[in-house]
Image (cartoon, rainbow, N blue to C red; front, side, top):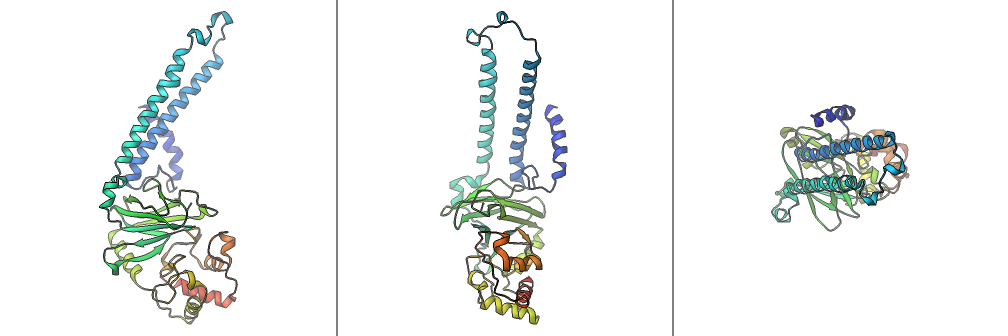
Length: 337
Ligand code: CUA
């Protein structure tokens, strides 16, 4: 009853954050189990805090005795409070939480090194300063492709991710789906995510990784089986051939200029590997590590003023283009669906 009574106000407080990126807003089985433990901790915290404040208030308002009425602590008065309140209760609470936490951790089989040897990851995610490289690892080489920053998965199906880093330590974290797992250079970690229903779930790099750590965002798009298949088929295709004269001119600028040094567009000679694969950039919702909307204005701003939008990023300010060239470049990128 007490738990239910406390849940009421807490739920009311959280009601405004339905779409928020929160560990309590669970959309998958793993996150749900973590949330149960989080709720238990929150409820215990509220109960203990309330009891503490009641005791503090009681101590403050109760009648003060004379000095003769009080025994000093070392004679025995108040020792019980210290033993029970200061030692036994914290020890019990912490032990219970520790055991529950270990049991929860062990229930995710992915963390067992014995299981990991038999694992076949579906997707490899590599953390970069400050974006996510996403490689789909189908057994058939013809079915593999690379994208960035937006991970599509089929809903209601566990998907195993292999996590790596290209530079410093990052952490993969999509709170609605699972807990946080570090991405460490030279060390492979795994996480198995599952979304209970289609939707877009936001994530965040969960480990400070430099200047633009806050602009290293992630999107997980869970789709119905049919939508997911259609998306995969589209991603497998090489880049769309430009049809309009504007986009054709843009392709020339992209392939012949500095863009192709860092970015890949499959089907063209642009084959750089230090920056996100742009083969289907127009199909993605956001740009710049999901920091800005994928719109004409932001694309142009990103090309010319990346260092103002995301200082320190590897993308330089490309100020050499005329207004017309910039429009052509953007027209080319926007038809890479
Ligand atoms: Cu990557 Cu913080």
